[in-house]
Image (cartoon, rainbow, N blue to C red; front, side, top):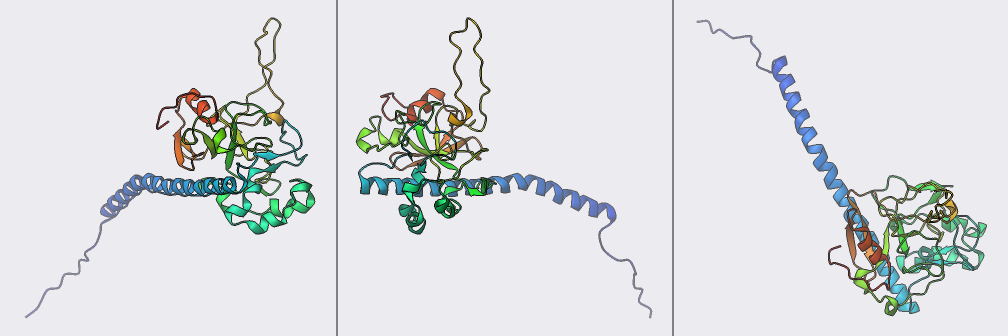
Length: 291
């Protein structure tokens, strides 16, 4: 008795294989944006956590000194974005409160930020000063950047001792000076650092920003030349005096630390006037909850 055995092999045909590959490609295409969104959400959460640590460090400084650190220590103003002067930033002053006491002890405040003896500390990278969504760690002359900046003023203006923010030239703001309330006043915010950055230790626009142009800090307006008969034409400050506004690598807005220590995500669609009110410590303007 003979048993017939078929020699046909079971498997995919070429058409079936192509269909499966096409389906897998479609699924990957659908899932990839969700994966990227999840990764960005995680980075944004890490960014908020780092900013909260900086906020706590500033509060610890205030508890010990009786006032917030100066936005920048320098003998005179306004502050230019040039490597000249003392220019000790608020970030240098809070180093002992972010577990960077070794760096603080090696930094010579009297010599100034740009002294050769302080260069090793300036080149020291501090992890919590960099937003995880920022693709660049070094921007200028091999110096680590800070993507977090103190708020010095409510509009575009040079960094000086008459600014109305919380961190500015030789400032020593106490919580009693925050007339508008600590939960309504910006302490720190995110910044996208552009060219000519002087590093996290420099108290220039590298670590200070204003509320003048939210989500557009890397775009410096071209000078407007006054024409005959146009008395209202504004005088554009030199580039070295331009500071810039807050910005971020997150979609739709940026993280901010308020003076009460809380961290809030502020939409880029916030009313410009409301945002300006949040940057002024004592303008006595009403601010809507939720921003």
